[in-house]
Image (tube, rainbow, N blue to C red; front, side, top):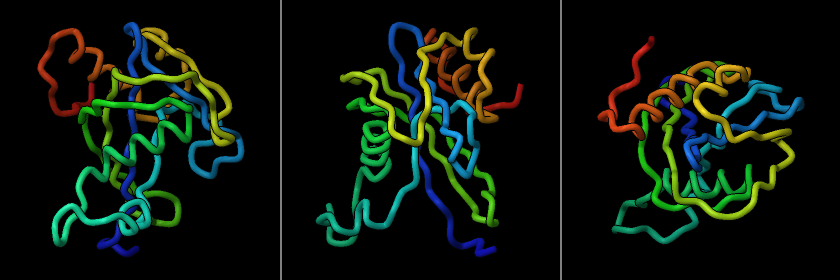
Length: 160
């Protein structure tokens, strides 16, 4: 395992009228097939390397641009005002260290149009989300965000 190289992934919880958008991964997906999740995807070098730099040596807003791209690709919505929620890491199949940054968005427009890698979607309340087979940790993120949107200070993720 190359511990110096990581996949970097961004996910987004979309919020509308007190509900959260979840999507079911297609049966052909290698990681978490037929399991419910939130839109997101992997950062590729081409996502920024082919763009002009924002300073003489830096590119800015990589994760925000990644969220915009992945949400539009996976569920067909355009998003704005992306806000940070939490981060996590895990080791993917093939021993690939992976860092995931989770965001949330309550400013989006368009109609849901799923890509071929998603087979279904639902707008759910926190209570309704309990009845879905979610990727481990997604429910806790929904819960964390739900508390925040109801007035609690956004805190670090904690196992309940």
